Length: 435
Image 1 (cartoon, rainbow, N blue to C red):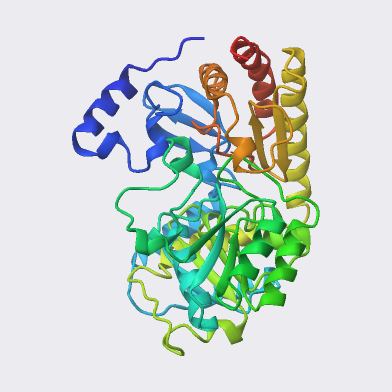
Image 2 (tube, rainbow, N blue to C red):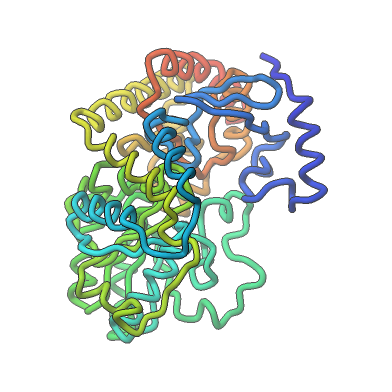
């Protein structure tokens, strides 16, 4: 198929004059796959339309938030009413309390919440909270896990940093990362060794309970429980970065799915219904360290924005409907099975690796097992690029990176599933030529 691209090409050239690289987040520039990104004009349900009139089945889902699909009518109506009352006050509203109550009711480890405006801000604040509450300075993070672009966390990072081959960044002084310790994902002995070597110095273990920024890499059996046990034994806090997995893998997030209770949880994406939002949540005992009750300073002009709170409330109400996650699981399983069959038809058994946790999916162009940063980055990026463009030309929009997830929404129906699987048969055949 040949897509129309002239309008997107013109839009990209114009953008490059005033936006760095023509984009406001690096992975959007298509640097990892080549070509010009389609400029999106509108979205509804499970589909996007670009400025050239091409329509796509969307699996980016705004990198996770669009679990209901785009422009869900109930969310749109609620937001429209909120906008008419004003977009920001810089003062308390009852909406903040209502959304915090909804979050605390859904996530057992959370009793109190502090809202912020992004996932990066949430994780940065959670780390500060852990350090302030424990009086310790060191944190442990996993190689290839991305927790936002705060200086102390931009070490061996995933997501866009991994996609562009820049696992750390110039502009981050050595002193900013001196207290950040690294361990491979799914490697309990490495975490144990770090805690023992730095006894009584580690404030927190920070982890994505399902790694979603080096592709989708699930935790090995016993890994999350092992982290919980190590943190308890050494007096460190366990921070789950659930900016991506929160309210996506279950109403209680990954911690609900796996039955592990962290000390601190970071949230974002879905809790704002697609609006810019983030949150830190924990027990009252931990949260009381935040100002104004405690000495750990944290503030934000747009924190608890009323439009974002309204969108989040409307979204969470819909997620609580009977059968929501069961139906999402059925759709996701059908897509996963269809992609596996398409790869097998192209002769790619044991040459690609499929992972799925709930409505997060990924296909690595690498043989199994893929369990961490090292095995994920063994993927054949040229084969992924061929697969990506073949899918795009057939009306299926994936993230332009081997190291991002596919996100399924409640708006994906049988027509979208069928189109995706049909496109995948041809796309895997194109990729097979490079493997």
